Image 1 (spheres, one colour):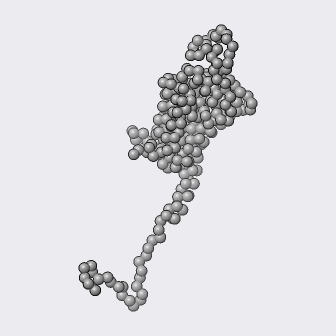
Image 2: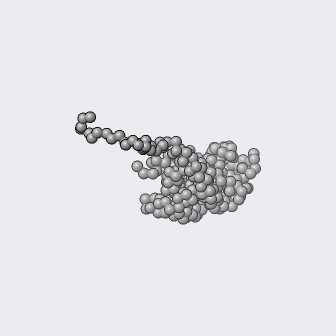
Image 3: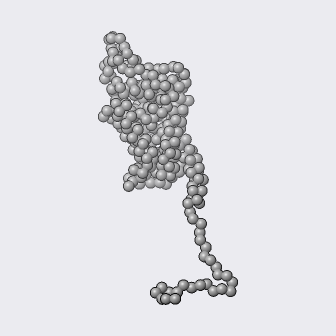
Length: 281
């Protein structure tokens, strides 16, 4: 049985991302950013929009996702798979909820597959070291800190952002901090190689703009802020590992029996010897 099958938190995260992409986002089989109306409107509704978090009560909506009166399509609308008259969906998800929902959504099969491979390489080893609950906390913390970094860097950004890059970066950072010489992937690569893989993936994601299905100006910073998730993952992993190490010796002391010492004979007495087996007394 390999490590992945013994890593319930890693499997839970991967299953959640796949199910959200297939059943909720309706991502289909598109390798790049899907073009369907349900996908676009779900991204606009449940993606992270910094403007909505920094302007309480402000709700940005995609005009394609709102009921529209019958009218002539605007220039360029023929490029989409849905018309402006499509009844669409209403974007009404609470802004704080999008911090969590956005990290479970992805921008196509390649985006989803690449992040899940990175998670599968780093997650089981880190979960073996920290435990399932701490591993899950680390994943969520990496995503939340990445979202906070995006809001701080671009507080007025009106573009929805999706993807688990920051959360997975937190897992990779935790593994490299605790087990820098660990061998990962079937090719037995060092854990530090995942840092290089993560950087290359972010460059590829930026070229395809997969984390921002609803395009706009000024959103490139989203492909840099996962570094914040990487840093907090490394720091938090060390803290969680230290706490777990302090608790472990106490459990071992309670479970291990006290050593037995041999009795010494009283002074002047010779030790009693048992008769050899098979002889009568």
